[in-house]
Length: 266
Image 1 (cartoon, rainbow, N blue to C red):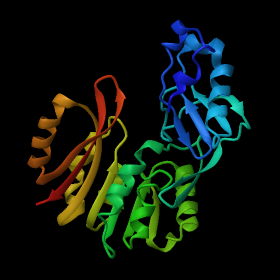
Image 2 (spheres, rainbow, N blue to C red):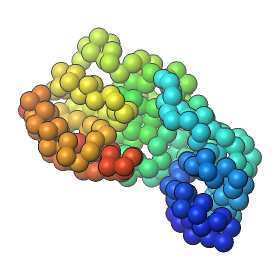
Image 3 (cartoon, rainbow, N blue to C red):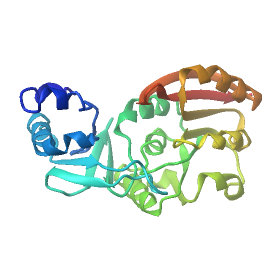
């Protein structure tokens, strides 16, 4: 979305250079990441966004990085109704949430559907860091039996509601627990594991092979620089995993990208 283009002539050129065109739209809420040098132009920026994005009713500014177990940021209201509750629609699914209290990444919609279409009816799937359910609900809709672990109690509540809303509640078991406790909690093995790991949680991959049946598939997400990828592939092979696919799926910082790995337990 061309946020800078909308503000030419409104915000001085030297300030406009500090504006990132990157912002999230979750349901009818837009979340910006404004440089402090743009504090004097918040109203103009938010008004331009509301004018150009007819589906947006509220604009927030993210003023802290992700914090705490809920992986949420503090939000500053810039324009609109001020309600942080929304319903996000994605590939026919509906996700209810309070964006001020739970984590949700609207930019992973393609990845969520790419993974879901690989799921076969009758599979047993494990979803870690499940959030409000966007990686868990589509596989359940394809006939998988899903166990979803999420540490945030509030996110678990939304996940359960979203499972009901999307007609898959009977196929999803929601567990409020730390993903690292999965081996102790779940005395079983799965056909598939879906793991959108938060930044700094890569060590979870070491425990995944023991949670899978032979031939089982892992969809694992990590944050890395491109030169680190070959070393990662070797590490995963040493864990008894064959890398079937490795793809970049978004930049998160200078030189750092989110990478998706599809791997098979051999």
